[in-house]
Amino acid sequence: KIAILTSLVCGHQVDFEEIHTEGITEITAVDIRYAKAMNRAVKLLATSRKAGDSYYAIVAPFLLTNKHPLYNVNDVFNAIFVRGNVLGEAMFYGQGAGKLPTASAVVADIVDIAKHLHRYIMTFWSSRKLELVDYKLGAGRYFFRTSDSEAAVEAAFGAVEFIHLPDVPGEMGVLTGKMTESEYEEKSKKLEHVIKMIRAE
Image 1 (cartoon, helix red, strand yellow):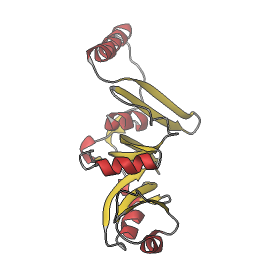
Image 2 (cartoon, one colour):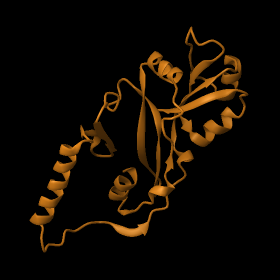
Image 3 (tube, rainbow, N blue to C red):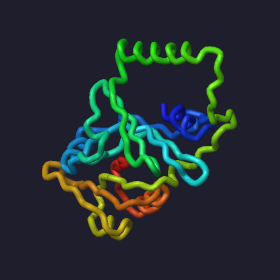
Image 4 (cartoon, one colour):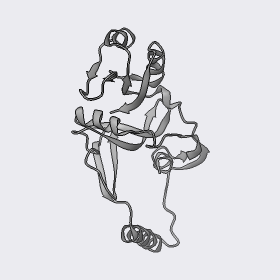
């Protein structure tokens, strides 16, 4: 889906097999408890962002704050959150599963085709493949669990937010400032025991 949407935005073919993809199978109950302690929720997001003359895309779990528009998207509902230079922020929300919503979308497409029979509709799309930028160059915040000391974490990452769960001894949660994923990986190598990392918005 994010390959199709990116293709529509940039006007070029996007190969979905080149998009870095992670699922939710590694998310644990402890991760969810940390998320609740931070007033956040774990959501599987397909993200595409402009980077210079190209785009980078990734599918992975993210921690969203309770003020983010996608925070309350649950069950069979899907949403597309768009941020544009002129438009600002906008979200398109609705049911994305089930026979009736699917049938409605198919019928709408057929009606649109019938209305434009024997007409050429101007589109700005090229079959030339878009070379995606490495997703690790994208900037964001990162939450990770570690059994290292606060001093070791601050020495590696600078100013961060610490999250402690009283009934989860021997570890803590850390929310970093904004940085690229490459920078996060370099800084995290200075620590001895990183248990889990989840990207954060």
